[in-house]
Length: 240
Ligand code: URA
Image (tube, rainbow, N blue to C red; front, side, top):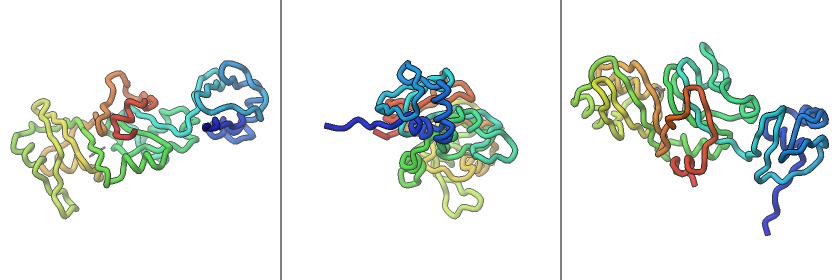
């Protein structure tokens, strides 16, 4: 029989990103924490981790060994922790998640919007970002000038990027409007979409990532919002 994993409340809170063990102990003693609906004021009380729900200052959390989330990235946010010109996307997340050391998987430019995955699971981050796995990504690209059939053929057969030796091709290109295409890429080279569009003598006016693997940016995830990845989302990402 598998033994249920147990841990004391002080360690649980600290592991989940609510601060040092000392800080968590103080919150517990101050009766700021409920577990499965009841106040617990003893930091050494042990709880089973599976399906554990607790509240911190009135907000409910579920114990998660690792965090897996998606965000609808807004424009004018940077994907790094130490930003230069704009606020960081991590400022849109609850503080405990940032404390846990979550990282975004593949950066989007500050002016790019759309789907971004965020996690603190190193294996998952590697699985989703390693060039070996070639997880396809779909971008909605709005260009300055009309996109011609010859341009689409060029993107599909391969274009030469400045500073790259080999040509690079899109996996798929679908024309959505006179100036809008959906372009699927297998790699994530620096400014890849913008450079590929420049190679067809056009210019990106707006860029939005709308899909990673089979996972689409949900219509109901508003710009700037995030949510946990569900089991179904993980299947769409090819992780079972
Ligand atoms: N390609 C780009 O040029 N920019 C992005 O943000 C993502 C892909």
